[in-house]
Amino acid sequence: MPAEQPPKLKRQRQHDLYRRALETMPGGTDSNFRAWGDDTVYIDRGQGGRIWDMDGNEYIDLRMGYGPVILGHGDARVDDYVNERMRRGVSFSLTSEDEIEAMELLKQLTGWVGKARMTVSGTEATMHAMRVARAYTGRNKIVKFEGQYHGVHDYALVSVTPNDMAELGDSDNPVGLAWGRGIPEAVTRTIIPARYNEMAVLRRIFERDGADIAAIIVEPVLGNAQGIMPRPGFHEEMRGLTKEFGALLIFDEVKTGFRFARGGAAEYFGVTPDLATYAKAMGNGYPVAAFGGTDDVMSVLPDKVSHGGTYAGNRVAAAAAVATLRLLRDTEALASIHAVGRAVQAGLSEVINEAGLPYTFTGHPSMFGIMFTEKAPTEYRDWANSDHDLYDAVAVGMHARGAMPEPDSREPWFFCEAHAHEDIVDRVVTAFSDSLDVVLDERAKDGKHADQAHVGLGKEIG
Ligand SMILES: Cc1ncc(COP(=O)(O)O)c(C=O)c1O
Image (tube, rainbow, N blue to C red; front, top):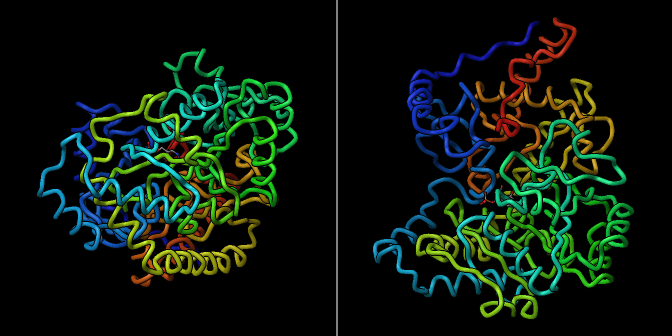
């Protein structure tokens, strides 16, 4: 029996909004990552684990705003606390008690951070962490891994997410690839690209440039390439290597922090860095972020390193962090999230096995990717060898069936606490299964990739 096509999504209102937005906003939106051309989504509201677009289409949200919404949309426990605080005024550029409590909670949950400061975005957090590392060590260079995303400042936009792996250079000697124009070459030269999970390349880099290297910055998993996990021992070896060469280790926990475990990836993998950055899950979607480290490393602040910001530690962000982190500390929210992720994985496994496709789950149950591939991926370059066109087509097909993962295979699926209470597992698995059936049918008919129309969705749009 041929697989069934879903009813078409209503799109009229959103097409009108798209055309209107194009008059004032490049790509019709505020971020390149949301610019999906004619398919750009204009959102009305969210509740728990579901969202509704401006045409009233309902979806189980598997993007959760690229990860921050850890409890659920419109969580009253957080929103009521934030609202109460907001009514006292939002912007003073003076310090509130919530800011102090937020950093106390961060310290308590991580167990190793001595001092921390709030920023508004993950971008600012990684920018400051890199600066602190340079100031502390008196060195200029930072090692960063291919395929890792640390935000949109100039020092982060190197070797991030090309489609063509040849642009990353020789596998033994990767080259720094600036993402887009406008990034000074002199800045790019301070960033040394490395390959995730490839210790031999990393050691060669340190043997060559160790005296100039201030830090390695690493997403503990390849969070922006489906959450590819470290090989056993990789983090420990990196920890050893940085110590050997007098460099710092920065964990960019913007995606993993307060998600993998209460103490983030550092707790999950049992490796303690010198500095770390947090954002997303820290505030259930409110714009909150922080960078922190050991007392010793952070002692370069406030006298020797610049950090500030009109909105740093603002009322809304600080209140959101307090309410969210208290809940993550005092409830079993993370255990529920991990359980729902595992249940979805079990359902997807059955479907994919039945279809006879090679695949692997990457990442952690709370944040995982699906790679159609024979060989378990270990680094960003492996993404090219997976059948990501198949994934992208299935993901787009899921939208029409009421579930919304990112239509780019590099972005993992995210789960929140509300998903655990909303009985979403069967709906997500069915949406996936029905979409896969249609895509495979079309491929079989064409004898080639049936998803060409969708190429261009997602991250690569500049
Ligand atoms: C690992 C990581 N670091 C940094 C950032 C940048 O955070 P923001 O978008 O808040 O600037 C992101 C955003 O997705 C991220 O995933």
